[in-house]
Amino acid sequence: MRILVTGAAGFIGAALIEHLLARGEQVLGIDNHNDYYDPALKQARLDRFATHPGYRHARLDIADGAALHAAFAPFSPERVVHLAAQAGVRYSLQNPAAYVQSNLVGFGNVLEACRHGSVQHLVFASSSSVYGANRKLPFSEADAVDHPLSLYAATKKSNELMAHAYSHLYRLPATGLRFFTVYGPWGRPDMSPNLFAARIRRGESLDVFNHGRHQRDFTYIDDIVAGVVAVLDQPATPAPAYDALHPHPGRSDAPFRIYNIGGDRPVELLHFIELLEQSLGRRVQKNLLPMQPGDVEATWADVSALRAATGWQPRVGIEDGIAHFVAWYRDYYRQ
Image 1 (tube, one colour):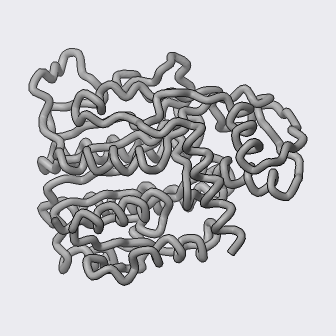
Image 2: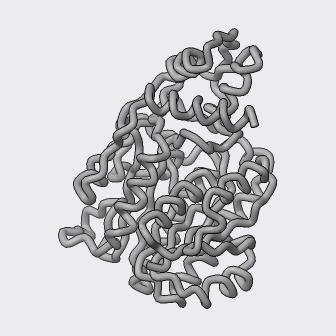
């Protein structure tokens, strides 16, 4: 198939493209190579497959509708995986305009391109942060998600609403995946595994918010890729038993679905740090601090819907995942 992937130089995008190329797909990757974090890491991810005969690359910003259309139309993708976004909860407090441009304007351009390009299935990235102030665990797709705690979360909720509108109006099959704390080799340097590993390696103390009592449903990158592929291969269809008098937020009479994708095993942050210390062979001082604005205390994905629909389930536990991450981290940053 011809598959277009936005956010190609990103953590999940590059891992997904590598998998798609290995199974023989033709892939067009799109990325703007911005400097939100080290562009050299983004390029290193791309270098793993940049010369593959099934891959081509377009360097552009999805907020530029004309440039996106110029790349999209000649390739004529059958399916699209939209992963490009301005990421990060805390950065959204400092630079909200970046989230409006990339996550709202950019996603609108992607939807228009899919509509006019007769795309057979759009899979797009949502986030566990849409659950916001919710406290009932585990988080279910049936839960209301109307109380976001950050602009980033609000843009991801908006993406789900925008995709549903296009699915309803233009019968565009669309599936949103709410990712839960993705980690592993080639991860983003602004995420906690990389930040903690860097400070532990240097013997520096760690600022640990919420006194380390945060719980996160960490999800290993290989499990994420497997879930994206499982969904991509199964285009969304209208729910046969959809009841408009009792609507389910994750289903519709349009070809639209929302799924959680997570490790299904919440891990306390202090335990996560201890595993990093063990793998890196060094213990550090921990500065236990109060909760930060925009943070949530715990996340836990109910993945039963995705499991029932595709047979997918998480396979990599936190102990093995941390060991794989640290092995990559040592090798990459030693170079």
